[in-house]
Image (cartoon, rainbow, N blue to C red; front, side, top):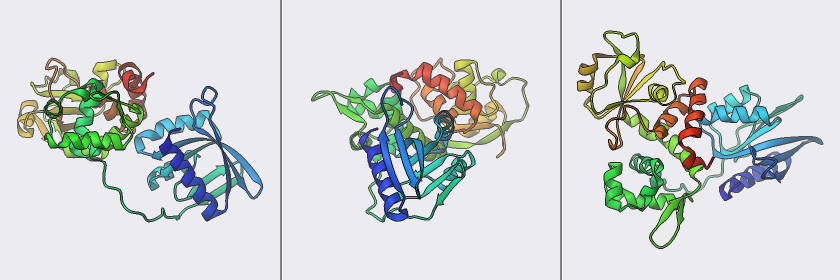
Length: 336
């Protein structure tokens, strides 16, 4: 458990006791014995004690739910503790019988006949922190450049800007954001490295899902002339497969239902070339390509982007293949 998680835990437990009068005791996890959880939380409801295996998060995103549900199944009784849990995620946690506690002292427990559901506590008003510039649209492009190859951190600012396709003025702001977030390790006077890479990867995926990817979306389409196999569709130069088709090409383990395409060509030109018709419910989703073409012969997105695209679908079959891609192609970010 890192310092940020300790802050989340302390605030949540303080609010739980102060506002709701519920006693709680925390036991940190033993590294080897409890590798999957952060610790155990003992709650006392009017002399009824429940001992939860607990996981701590700053915020919880939809793409993390599948992993949390699996973790809960292996560590019952289980509780999620987070600074902020969005209402829809709370609903899904309740549907799966998962207890939770947030930073405002809101609580849900339904365990062996003991039901506690406290909602409506508001987080304390405070000065709004300025946004971390590493997670703006431009910052996310730079982070993608770094996460694909962390050695790029020590390139010149000009080369980083050119490689990431952003204005030079963004680079110093991104480095400042990485330092503020605890993601940058100073090796010596000149060289730096990423740290807390898995947390940074999660933050990047959340930012990509919420900020960058929607801005890249050029529309949904269907083919005027259907073809039996998507692999028969010849993509022009500057256009590559993403999401499910990319996962199929990378792992051979996923039969695509949604065909994601990233393009450097203008939308109208691509529509004409591939004979596409706009259709809000179409299974062909086209996005503007936002990274440099370093390997022209490759017809699919980098594993990092394929992994992210699969995760944020929320589809269990995609999430399963995403785990394979993470284990086989992103070990350098997860230290597995």
